Length: 426
Ligand code: PLP
View 1 (cartoon, helix red, strand yellow):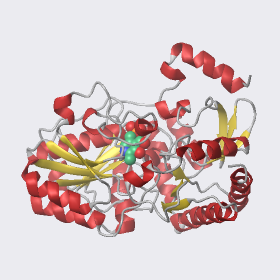
View 2: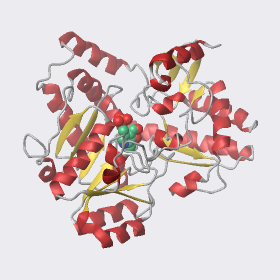
View 3: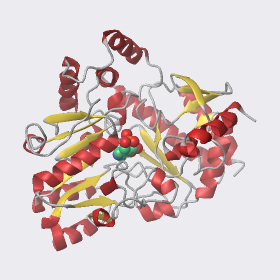
């Protein structure tokens, strides 16, 4: 028995399923989860002393790699000053200024503690601002686990086959209209029927919770047009894509401006942080300026702000995203070439430092239905093979992969060599 297996047995005695977030339980790939002891740069080290090249990066935040000195220094300095006061600090303003600079659609920003809080609060704000109750989301997109958003959701919900969770009141779920990602005609149709009842469209501009699906040309632009026509709020959930697909997120990459943006992951540098922000006239409806209530004991926590701000400063260095995108493209191309050489049909796609691969005969994947038709059994075998080779991929066929600046060319070459070996066994 490995040390990880022993630890998992103990964890299950006290923690539901042994994990604090379902996808970590490896139910989507079989076997037992790996328990990690430490991480440095591009590598994770498990409790049995094995090293892995990491393509999860704590599910997105670790864009610099693990244990980056700049983040550690910022954290140590703040620990010496106190870990939290529940009162305003100058670092919150520094953080807000930086976010507004990097994401020009954001005039005002409120910090929260997770991506879930960010999207949940943005939805409440959109409803309060418009005086409407209905929202539109897309099947397979995941926006955290708030009730209104856990309807036909992606990520762990999709991995475990429970995209509609028991416990979400039917009367609330009815207000969430779920459409097909990348299908703008479906969106126009529903708005024609009931556009004046719809408070907001929320979308992952690059869908990363049903593997990785970039928007087809015209989709995001179409959402913008529809929201303008019907007075609905366009919310980009950039919890995953923000600061990752480009410095300005997906809205920077594709040139479409939302009304509100939800942020998370990279913005906290590995600490529990989220944020939502956008147009001044909408954000001014948030308490204490306006009547839409939103609050948090630990929101804007100085320790979290110091890690987040140090991360945003580091990724603002000229050329950071170009270099990271180049590495990610090298990985994508290498995986595809290795699959082709082994005669394994596979599509590989991505945006910036996000990537996804699908076991499919299709040249590219643009819809939820296509994702569901991919060969999940083959993914599971591939995942387990790669794990043996010391490559740590997301333990689900429905999650995007993430690269970090700490990955060397050699790490990428080693990953592709490992994939060639595993492809030969599939
Ligand atoms: N939105 C998106 C696009 C996400 O990928 C996630 C988490 O994976 C969330 C929201 C929820 O964020 P959190 O897990 O921090 O609550």
